[in-house]
Image (cartoon, rainbow, N blue to C red; front, side):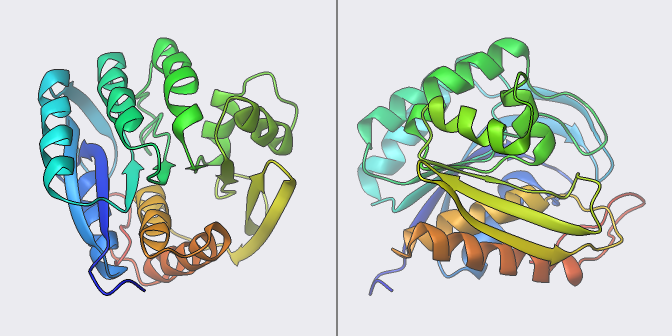
Length: 256
């Protein structure tokens, strides 16, 4: 570990229910022993059940925040979550070009747990062309993986397509698959790097993907290897889900 506290920059949406988004990232990053900086991409109207609407932050304001924060603070890893709008991708992409040596974790939030779609087809295209080539690890669930690679015949083929689109590695999570256990698979350019199997919990959770991706970013910020970061993040996420709680009427949230 570094003698200083590592810094993770979260670029994501705000969830007023506190289950996902920026708040989930900050809680996770602090739990993993890092300092959290945050830039909000969209404001949402949502609860633990679904997103009702979202409203993008001005792209120029996002750019200015990213520039001013990075000018002051040494960032060790970047986590990107909900983007929402095409113009915001441009701001993020331009910023990433100025910090090419910082590891980037991209959690492609494409839909809410309640089913509301959060990404247009144009945003998907722009994500693939402008962000994936700058991504150290992509962390889609199986539904998101198929959306980003719609012509693929299997999840492994999805991963291969994501790698061809430019990301260095991809972790596809299996929560949404029809298996008795949850199987998460990590791929890089050499093929399947790691496969982890986890007991399937009987609740529905809000913010699990945010927790996982922020935890991976924290591991990378600590200079851990990709494999060790992914393994530790999965353990932290599963533990937080197992001890999750229900603050409202809908989904459980991880106890981070």
